[in-house]
Image (cartoon, rainbow, N blue to C red; front, side, top):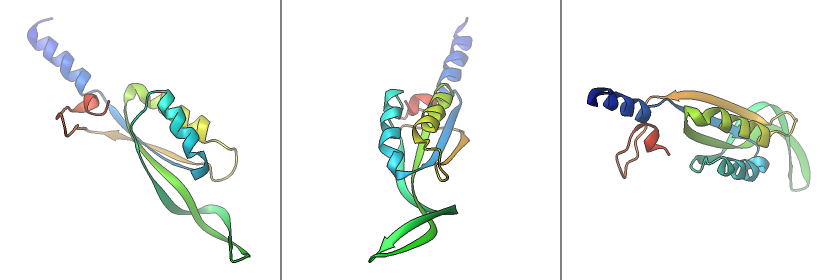
Amino acid sequence: MGVFGFKLFLEKINNSNMKKIEAIIRKSKFDDVKKALHQIEVNFFSYWDVTGVGNEKQGHVYRGISYSTTDIQRRYLSIVVSDEFMERTVNTILETAYSGNVGDGKIFISEIQEAYRIRTKERGSAGIN
C-alpha cells in the first residue's frame, strides 16, 4: 500500500459512519440505563428531563386530589456512537429500560454527517470516542 492508499485508509477509519441514538425512557429507569451504558463503554452522552404527550395516562395527586393527565414525564438521552457501537448501545437501552408496560419509551436512530472535538479538533469517530 503506497502513501496515497495509506492516507485513504486512515481517512476511512477517521470518518467511519456515526449514528445519533435518541432515547426517551422512564425517569425511574435512567440510573440503570446509565450504569449499563458505562458497562459497555458508552461513557459520554447528554440527557435532560422532558414532558411529552402520548396515549398513556399518568396519574397525579395534588393536595390529596387524584387526577390523570396525558402529560408524561420522561428522560431524553442523546448519544452519538460509531457504527460499531450502535447495535450494542440500542440493545442495552432496550433491555435495561424495559418494564413491559405502556410508556416504556422510544428509540430513534439517525445518521451523523460529521463530529468534531473542539479541544483537539479531532473529527469523525475519533472526535466522539
